[in-house]
Structures are given as structure tokens and as C-alpha cells.
Amino acid sequence: MLLTLYTDRLTLRPFELEDAQAMFDGWASDPEVTKYLTWPAHTSVEITKRIVLHWVADYDKPERLNFAIVLKESGELIGGIDVVGYLDDRKTPVIGYNLARAHWGQGYMTEACRRVLAYLFEQGYEQVRIDAEVDNTASQRVIEKCGGIWFAVEEDERPLKGDRVWVNRYLVRPGQGPIERQHIWLGIDVEEPLQGIKPRLSAAERAAGIIHSNLTLPLHISLKISFPAAGERAKALVEMAEAYFRSLKPFEIEVAGVEYHETIAWIRMKENEALNRIHNELNDRLYRGFGIPLHAYDKDFLFHTTLCLDEDPSKARAVYEVFKDVALPAVLRARRFLIGASPDGSLGSYRVIRQVEAE
Image (cartoon, rainbow, N blue to C red):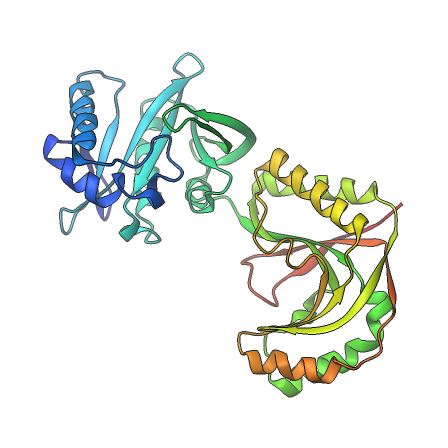
């Protein structure tokens, strides 16, 4: 269908043959953009030309909605958004999109997606599906801003790339506003056996000039570094984590000592089989059940209790100097698990929302 839509900053128009070079240069040849798409990066502009030619030929089909995203002010082609298919006997359109890397983080895709959704709802569709790979957090945020409700994580095949990936699936319905997002954190409370150091730690932070204290949470071992979740999805995964924690038994962790590492002063624990198992089981459930991927820092922080964290290495070093010779318990008993939340993920903004005692 030859159709043009408009937003405050964008024109969404049909693709033209002359767009091939700009598409190739802007995003089709960029492996960072195509990383999460179903097709691989184009190796020549001739590939892009053939695809655009196919799109142009398809515009005579009424169900074919494929828009070039163009900046109103400059006329620059910066991406594309289209209905890639229909489900439920053509009752549910499925949207796909891509954007040149130079224009990421400026709200353009959210703006374009909202306009296409509005058009589809004006045509009488009652819901639209949008998918995003579990690692593609930027796309997930776009979907949430457009009112997308997460409903499943499933494995998907990408025939053009010859692989399979896990994707989060969302539905958007008319009248749904942006979904409130929060940042979730999961850990083990070890404050009770270490509570004697808290007054000294607080004084050391103040003396070092640390403003964003780590002490808004109890002293802890992180099982899962902070991750974003929204709406019913956030509620369901908190309930899952709580039920999993309730199934665990208390166990002991040996303490190795206090260390300084770049911008962090922490208490390091010895390698622990039970802690490893809990970490792996929990992350497997989060990934397969909710599409929450393993973070690069998840394993790094598993055997540590952070005393302080600051971008200025000298401040963390100052706290380390206070605690490097402090006598600590040889063994910590892990029996209380914590679920924390923050509205924006910033240091010092987390609060405990659930405490779970191991059976």
C-alpha cells in the first residue's frame, strides 16, 4: 500500500529505488544494527537494491505496509518500519523495525512505532505483536514506551542467518500507555553476621566523601545484577524469584578477606558450590522464563560483598585502607534472600521489596 504518515519530526513514506544507497550506508551494512535482525548485514549495495526493488513491487498489495523513516527537517533516510506479517487469521499484525546507529537514543523509533500502531488501530486491529531478542534491551524499551505488554519468551528460528535465538514477545492494544519500568536486583543478605562493621563503614564513606552510598541495601552477595522489567512481567518474575528462594536451604560461605578492585572495596568469599548452583539455577529460570539474559557482571560479583563503590578510585581505596586489616567472621551463614527494586537503576536508589527466609 502506498501510504505516507507523519509525526512531529518524521515522515514515514514508501521506499523508493533511490533509497538503496542510503539504506546500505545507514544501516543495512552495519553489523551492529543487523545483529538483532532476521537477516545478515548486506555485503554490497546490490543486495540492498534487490530488496528495495522487491519492496517497491509489493506496494500494490493492500496489506503491504513498509515505511521508510525520514527526518522532516533534513530529508535524511534513517531507518525503516513495517508490518512483517500477520497472525491469528490476519487479525494480529506483527511489526518489525530498524534504525541507523547514528540516530539511536533520540526517540525516533518510539515516535515512528507509535504512529504506525495508531494507524493500525484506526483500521480496526485490536492488537499488534512486536518481538525483541532477549539481549536487545533498547528495542524492549521502545516496545514498553509504546504500551507493549510482555507475554512470553520463546525460541525463534532465523533461516537467513541459520541460527535460533530467544525472543521476548509483546502485545500492544489500543489505549495502552507507556508501561512503568523498574530495575530489579536479587541477592543474599549477609548483614547479620557483618553488622558490627556497619557503623565503621558508614563513617569511612563519609570521611572519603562518598555521596551515593551502597548502604541503602543490607550488606549482601549479588545473585543477579540489576535488570529492567515492566508491568506484569516484573510482578511475575518477582513472584518466581520469591518462590525459588523459599525452596532453598540455608548454607555456609567461607570468607577470604577484604580486597580493593579498581573502584570497589569488597569482602571476597571463597568459591562455594551451593552459591554457584543457586546462581546458575536462578539465571536459567530468568532467561528461559522471562528472557532476562546473563549480565557480564553477574559472575564477577557472585563471590563478593561490596563495601563501597565510587567512580573515583581514591575514595574506594580509602575505604579499603580502613578495612583491610579488620577481623571478619570466618564463615557466613546464608539463610535470607532479598529482592530489591529501583525506579531508575541509579546507585543508592534501591530498596528491599521482599525478604525470603530459606526453609
